[in-house]
Image (cartoon, rainbow, N blue to C red; front, top):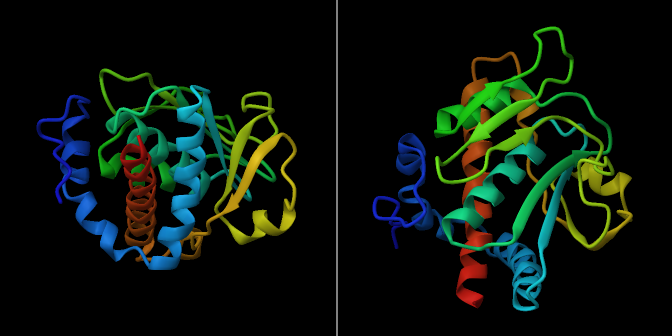
Length: 220
């Protein structure tokens, strides 16, 4: 089953179209246990949608620098593509540092347009990401998950690293909490495998977040 991005009513930036063109074919590569966990995320979203309620998700990792931003971005893009409205994704950490430039570069290689709008001296720069000329831009910067930039009540907390999972047995204000871990691409920082590792994690998260929204679409 191919994702018909060429004739999509939800236009994407050209390079991103190409990146996502066959992503549904990759759903079968997701291990069954992970698929079942992803379906829990989809069920939460479907239940909110059926009630006509706004759906907000915060993707959480330790420093809000890598995996949480990838999760936030791909969830939002997948929701947009599948026409799932009234949904907004966020990200946060158990601590805040900076959105890692390697994360930004991986998303750029995938086809997003991303600009740094901060001063060069800022330790926690703000990035503006665009995936379609027809959709609002996304803001990417590191923050604690309880930051006022994020929802405070009635959201899904999606924890994507085991350290954050252990540090946050309870996420205050969350309506539901789900752990769905990913290996940290940081392990390859400064090595010849750096770009490959980040690209692999970026594609894995993109595939799984599209799986989630595909399930939501099926449940409508």
